Length: 357
Image (cartoon, rainbow, N blue to C red):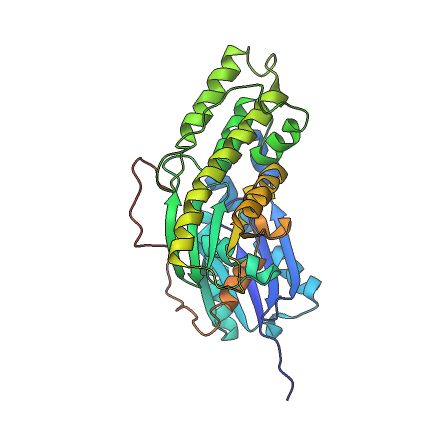
């Protein structure tokens, strides 16, 4: 008897992307549809939660229909439905969760409540042959963390941000420089013609013990430099962007090297298997950061794995895949969405405030 692939519908609505994807257990992405809200939020310089929730509600049915059409499937062909249940903006998370539960209840199929961060954490296994355990640098708009990924729902957090995440630093600095939203791509594009050594910026926590991050001071330093140089209309924006990108990259590398040493001590490599560093999340799409880590992993004998760009930014394919990774462990329909949901609930909080979970 031929094996029939398990077909999973994934839904993502944790921030400003309304997404639906259909993925099979043999790693085939049949559809990966995304309705972006960038145009809606750009005029505000960032995501407005209430506006985002309304936008999710307006388009989510159509996005799911588009995914089914792209996959050439009917809802009756779906074997399970997964949705981001946190962390994220609770309005959007609740909308995706309610839709997923309704589909599961109506079709009598399993429902999976997926941690958005776990979607990013497991996404490299959808596109690459990455065995457990591996070291993960999760670097996105709202999260910057270093974790040992032992398996689905099994994470050891080595470090997290003490204030702003790297993606937030990009966004807030881009807004101050008048480069628009989202900030990461705008900074990267502007930096192409700039000199990364032209503007002296700090590297918070570089050289210190541990694996935690801090980007708030870097953001403040750039704002002060911008002011002293005459503001966005007079300052050399290309040099500022290149210098900021280099500073963030240096901080990520320094903290990750600390995590590499710890990972090797806890999970010694075998003779036939090199340790793997995965970089996931929206900031992983930055070409300067990617090229920097290519050299770092070459020097340390790690293998570097970065998911394709479409799996780095928020998407529903990673949500469907995270559910397929634990196919035999569905959730109950009374699972409540969570605005905060740490991958490692036993990790001690770092010093500082505003810790991202």
